[in-house]
Image (cartoon, rainbow over all chains, first blue to last red):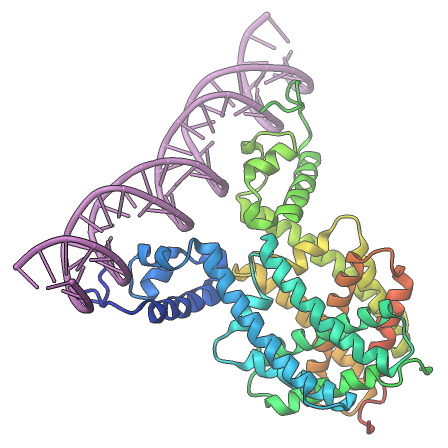
Length: 204
Length: 204
DNA sequence: TGGACGTATTACCCGCGGGTAAACTGAAGT
DNA sequence: ACTTCAGTTTACCCGCGGGTAATACGTCCA
């Protein structure tokens, strides 16, 4: 493996190289999954030899984890921004739904690592994802508890339900791009969610 | 590897052996995932030597697919029964949600293969799952379209959203068993869903 | 100018695990 | 009893892929 198709090794400052490696790994992991991605593939995608990879990351797993944490951080930021953008619960739900759609629509395809990981048997991976889901669902549960008289346990279940709704619908929407623009889609799902939870305790 | 801890090989009629192998494979796949499961593990779990496995299934992949199709079939049956159990859409949604919870609560843990597969990069696996999701979401979309004036595209998105809600909340509920019994949990999520979709086109 | 350190590379190791060849065994048919 | 054949086992192959020596190259600083 030569660094450029036919060229000499290009030397890069450590941080820059690291970013490049992460970006190459991202692509390969996204299109092949963790198990389908070979370290050789990633090295090749980065136009670098394998040991370079191991100078920056102790192993494949850690490389993957670095990316996963990265994207979970981004998504968390999207969501907290949305949640804090207003004090009106209705608008809060609307903005949060929109944030989900925006995250999924990012060109990095980071959502695939988060929501379609094929490394779910790794305890650390599943812990990271579960921790994120728990935090997010609990935020929603808080909003629900505020507007209804449901018990914490019940509110948490509904929080998970709505989080799942957001995640699944956003991913589906992305696949069918063109049919519905992002605003129309997220607005629709938001309305579904809001109608579902608002004034919940009352009949029908 | 001897067939019984300390015993001689036990000979079994073909069909019976096949069922036993499937059941052993099920356990191993469920607890280790596809990639974490070695054919040796499965053979050992079935108290059988590896070539026996290959007499019944051409390969690991096919063994996995057999199980996956099996569980998707079961779930499909649960759902169609629920969908056909009434003509009242409200009750239909309720029964369908309940069916989802019942499926997840089965002791076979089959839902893990379906909803937490780590073989999503395999085209056939993802096609099977996607086909199922599409069918189910479209059924819901039909119910929605019947009760609202949404376009097919919009109804489909909401169908996916509700399907995702059912799936995610049922799985979450299973993890926290004890807090809420299955009827209370599925009832709660059903109400969330039904409030969300019923009379959708009207404001708020 | 030269050596020291960080950056790369080539070339290799080796274990895990999917898959198989060949031989063994025991029950059923003649 | 002898054959036969399905069901089973032992013992092996071998490639993929994660991970690692050992080494070369450049650049900065004394």
